[in-house]
Length: 215
Image (tube, rainbow, N blue to C red):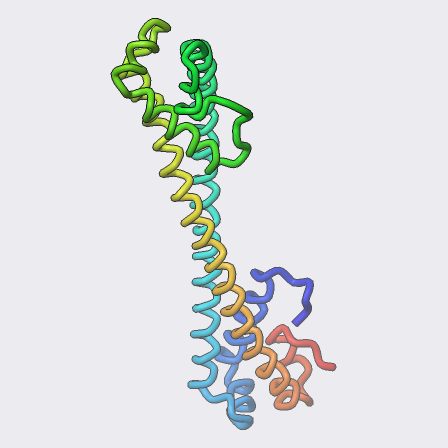
């Protein structure tokens, strides 16, 4: 089978070969004479069914991953914006308290990775919940409820990040299983096609009925 065919085209060609054999008594009889009995044809049908099932699962897994990624990016943008605004306020509110800013991971540049930012945000919002920190932040319009609401967004980002990792793992596994199933049925059909050319060597029109070109 040509390497440049899509998976759908490969499976469609295999289906044509199998159905063409089942629906044509002469083809079925000739193939039976070379070991391709009804049971063996059924084996090919089962492999084809398995491959199509894996193709459908693969598509679903990647669709789920796409949705999870979109949800994550939207919420991350909102949560990060809130975090950066609050961080700037923290730097003003505690600038005159020696050694206090590190308690909120409020010094230096922000980490570029998602996991790094999640850690910084976790530290900042957790430590801002102390009575002493809340008293200072209240002077800048921040209440415990406001900070908790922002922190909940960060936690949701963390949960969605874990979900995306799971979706990615599932999508990668489904790719391996899809490829293995397609290879399995293509290998079966490769042998079937070779035998069909032998069994129908004098009937090129029957080979064409199976979608096979005589060499």
